[in-house]
Length: 357
Image (cartoon, rainbow, N blue to C red):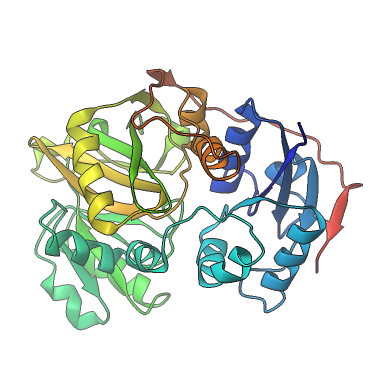
């Protein structure tokens, strides 16, 4: 059988693109994997069967370059590995559809809601789901409205890998951190810190491109190890219910993989209400017998490779369904167990790189 040509963009080390690449390499399918990135010294990029250096997603040359790359290599399906590329490819999806290139991603509407944390919180509120108290700060006048502690302060848009995130435990810290973020962002969101570090889950919901549910999976995250947290500080508040430490995940997740229906059933409802397609990833904590959603990612996850190790291979499912035209069993089985993470090194060979700049 001829190899299926697959493109993974944004394959830089540690990001979503590399996790998609790892999942594809775990697949039993006969694949030819092309990887792209904006920089040469990229671990994920170097591990593709063929590699390209491409323009940034906001460059006017980006879409023409990707289209040309796909045509040259007979690419059948394209997986965006960065949020910037996800948005750009979503806006130009018809260009690829006309060339019969499958781009299994969410709709523009879903992406628009989920990449903006303020819009995400509004969606959750309007549809009766649980979420932390929150306030969007656009000026120093908004800071006085924050009446909950501890508070998680972070950008409304972007902020992948917990970038520029802070935990405030006093009113003085709220004011200090908020004024600092206002020097960098037009607006940001402040959320109440909810639950303990051992109550956090990352949940994957997989749907067809016509918004029909395929399966769900959850990882009960371990976030107190050095690699797995961005912030780990002593709880100095009187909120003993939050645990000894206040912890924010780094985005490099590990933990116990299972169905966890008390978590996934609620997340399935959210995906259905959104009208999700392909992969959707939900970050939440289970607190006082309720699922509190604090973030929804309209894309493949930083845990895509972990799921694939356990037999829940989202990119492979999309290829089987839309390229090979196979029937996919709804709620197909997968293994359960703990998956740990570490660091690996690779020597990068530049001889096969195709420069797109």
